[in-house]
Image 1 (cartoon, rainbow, N blue to C red):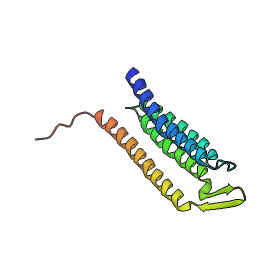
Image 2: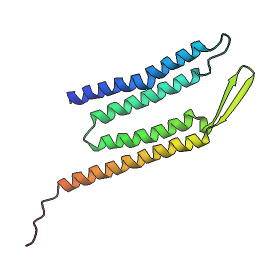
Image 3: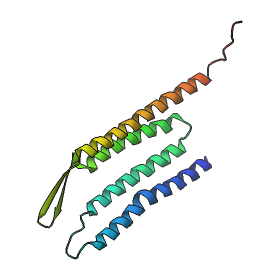
Length: 150
């Protein structure tokens, strides 16, 4: 169990750096580059990155600890479903409105939302097929050996 926990900690630190620290550094450098008096447009998205990071790290740790069991595949399925919901929520259904002082910008990201959801659906299907394969291999290993007639 200890090697699984160590591996989970290492992977979670890697994902924390990749998903939170690097984007946070980019956001802070972008916000410092904005002229004085302009509000930081990217600040609402820092919370979204934090939420995604927490979800990803939770599922990485859960998968590593339960590796080699059916629960690993169930966590893969759960991650795909949760990420689909988070993507829809974070992209506000595909229509994003951003305001700069007196200017309102509306972006229609529906096409990108559909692409992201399609990618997650493929990941969900892959996870379901991996779970079915795991269970079939488990059941197959418990069958008695076949004796050929000859």
